[in-house]
Image (cartoon, rainbow, N blue to C red):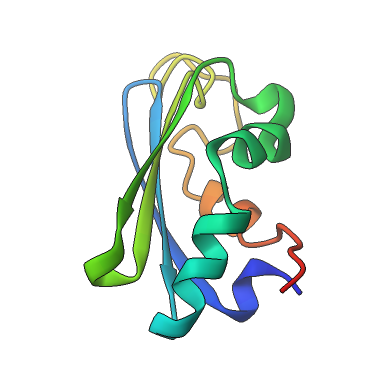
Length: 101
């Protein structure tokens, strides 16, 4: 299944840092997200789009997690040649990750 079947996401940015939230629709699915969507998996999924570290913050009281991704926006909004220098589409790309329950 793809993440979008059990979760939704939001994205923000500051400079060359992208901030991606992943929020379970149902609280019961949160442990599966914690197990399957690790910082390593996110780094691997985005591949060369990410030049820096991926840090995950867990928010169990919200059935959510937040990924702070450094070096993700091609230098930042004012310096990037990317079609999406704000990184808003990164949340949609994250939701395409396939996981096995």
